[in-house]
Amino acid sequence: MHTVYILFSETLNRFYTGETTDYDQRIAFHKYSPANKFTANANDWKLFLKFECDCKPQALKIERHIKNMKSQTYIRNLLKYPEIIDKLKKQYPC
Image (cartoon, rainbow, N blue to C red; front, side):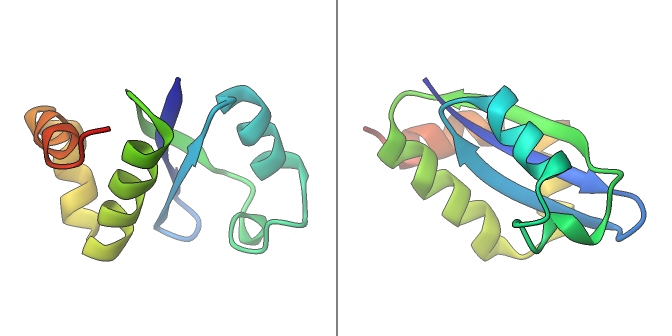
């Protein structure tokens, strides 16, 4: 399974959106690896939202869609209105 996840940092007041097949390993990378330049700017990243996709191409397209929106309101609405995620999965089928 492929997971799309969104992290939030209160320090930066920013979201980070990513895709992975191994969520626990990826989160450890964000927390403990200075190699990731964006998430290395803060150490208070918390999981805001995560959901499973049916295949990697779908997960990558949804991740890109969320990033292209460039909107904290849109990301907050993903949590508030889960039906948006269902629509994205239909919009980007496997």
